[in-house]
Image (cartoon, rainbow, N blue to C red; front, side, top):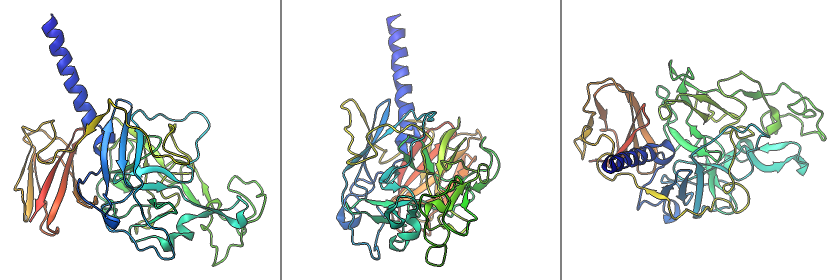
Length: 409
């Protein structure tokens, strides 16, 4: 009886560890040890630790891809030494909604911060008509649509276009970050049906510019305590946040810019936010998250001096496998050749029709290829890729995830 109990305990422990390792909130982060970015600062995510309640993401806030210049912006990116805590049990907020504040409201999968829609300034400093950061600060954004603030925190207010392939409109977008209420943020494309069915389509927000001729009323219809600037060529509609209104059901997403749906990473469904872009990949309001979070936001990540959580001593270190796949199904999955010149083949070692999602990520952290397939063997063209090291990431509908480094000759 004791032996049976011990064996049961061992197998339960193994199952628990595997479930922990394959959880999207643990495996979705981009780690490139030894790689540096701007000014020689260590780039992407430096470490991922987890407990049963939180994932601790240590990062510099510097991406692996090139950033800058920032026209008219005197600030310089600097190492932020952040440690963000992402709750593993996110819950809907059924109380008073929490506004997405100034400063970081989430973190991208490469450790870069994401900010809300505001640039922290208002018309005539009256705190009535708040400025849209994309309109007022957009000219200072670099080609990756980011810029540093006064303390050197590099961040984006809109779609992080250098982080993933935002033109891959025929496959479900990857998780590209997590909001600080613990819910994932996807790129712009998802299943048309929330049950995980139908074609892939671009997720559309339910916000629009208001049909107003002057700035004297607010989106809720009330009279503004002070008027905003005239609507003209200098300050067109959309220059201020109060120029937009939420219309339930107008688009695919709710007032938080998300929805509950089945995704490749969460086959049972999850509430998730989606990046908002138009058909030409241009950012559209509310860009990332809406004015409020969907979920409850734990302490530690927002507000002054935030983002410096302490990792518990009992936390487990998650280290992506440097060669070969992770523990699950290693015996039946193989890739060849490696190094590769033209095509890399993946053999899943099964005859069953299992849907796999395959991502290839370069060492800067950008997703360069994403496909889904039910074939037991898949071949991916790599002859147009530059020479170097790439991360091959495979996931299935059960939430299992595997990754392997591929060398392109």
